[in-house]
Image (tube, rainbow, N blue to C red; front, side, top):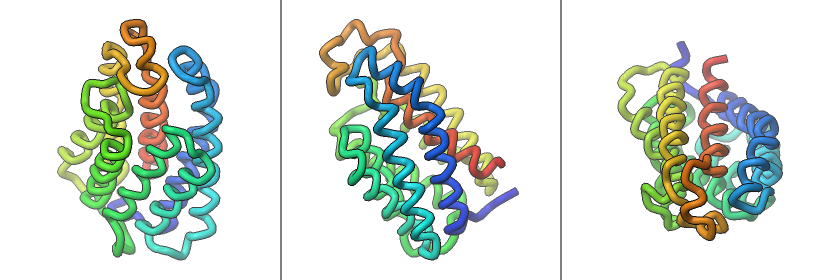
Length: 210
């Protein structure tokens, strides 16, 4: 059981995230082609590949700084809506755990809560609007409800919450971005951004469970 994450663990986490985005590229492109521009898979793969690269180059730094630098890199190389939101989330999450050489479950929960707050503030989205917020909220709540010390289990709880969020959003109507144009037609469809966030959270779980 792993109870603390150091810089190397964060580098591994971002490696896993980059791999997950590469593997999810076809799915994200397909989902985004229905109610978006169709480039989400390309954007996420490019952004997280750059985040993983900067993480390796910053491996001697503390976890919070690595996460912040990864977020800034995503914003720089993938300046789309989702790139900006993902990057902002990582930057805000990293800032929340600054000054800590190792991260506990409580720290990871603080990271994920700050990630959510950053996304909500930057994207101006509220719960129920079929965005990544609706996937992040149950993920954050599930991790915060976990009272143990096992990082893998904490992220497993977050992944479970995110999965529930993905299913819930299918019955919502999109109210942001290009998808908002389709309104009622988006009911029953999976939100592309939500799928990307689920891939990220699932990768975080994998990085500690492996």
